[in-house]
Structure formats: structure tokens, C-alpha cells
Amino acid sequence: MGFFSGEYDCTVDAKGRMVLPARIKSNLPDIDAGNVVLTRGFESCIVLYSQTEFKKIYSKVSGLNEFSEEYRVFQRNFFRGINEVELDSNGRLLIPKMLMAHAQLEKDITVVGMGNRVEIWSPDLYQKFLIQDSSEFAQLAEKYLAPTKKE
Image (tube, rainbow, N blue to C red; front, side, top):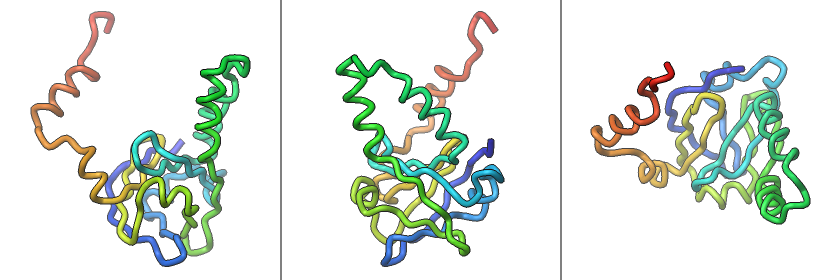
């Protein structure tokens, strides 16, 4: 599995295509190098997964109990936003219009490596989700990364 990191300023052309940053593209597994999965993020962004990574998530979601109304609602909303996209020879991918609208994307975009996935944001919306106070960031780091008693 590739590890995606970094923050990149990119653009979307008039046809809805963007060039995947070279650092992101180079971290796609060889088996997935020409194909990625785009889906709606829980916030107003687009999430890009390698096909290998997405298959793990797909297995979890498709394995939910179809006889539970709550699970069906989740599955319906989860699966409706999934798009398999092929990179062209120039490393560009076409962002579907429905996803462009969901993320409120225009010409300028911000691409953020998030470990096992990549987020694609409108720069203005992205800024609203960033922590501005370093002490708040430190508190979250302590909460989620500090050793527990078992460690």
C-alpha cells in the first residue's frame, strides 16, 4: 500500500480534469497505477483511494446486514458516490460533475495526502477544517497518540 502525504495546490481544467500530483501518483500500488476510486467525503471534499485500499472498505460496507434499515440507508448513501476513474497518459483524471458539486470545486483545488487516501478540496473549504490553534492540535495529539496504560 502506498502512503500518501503532503499538501498540493492544483487546478481543474474546463473539462473537469486534474493532474494527479507526481508524489501522489508514485505512491499508487503498481497494480492500481492507472485506476483510482473517487467518492464523496464525509465533509465537503472528494476522497481518492487506490483500488487496493478501496476493496478493504468495500468489503466492510457490503458485508453489513442488508435486513437492517439503518445499514441499508448507510450503504445506499455510501455506494451512490463511488466512481472508478482511469488516469490518462498525462496522469490526469476526470472528476465527475456530481463530485465536483459535492466538493464545491472550481478551478483551484487543494490535494491532501491522508495516509491510505487522498482528499481533494476547495481551498476555502479546506481552510475551514484546519486547526488554527496549535494548543488544540497538541490536545488532539495527546488524546489520540499518547501511550495508553496497556502499552
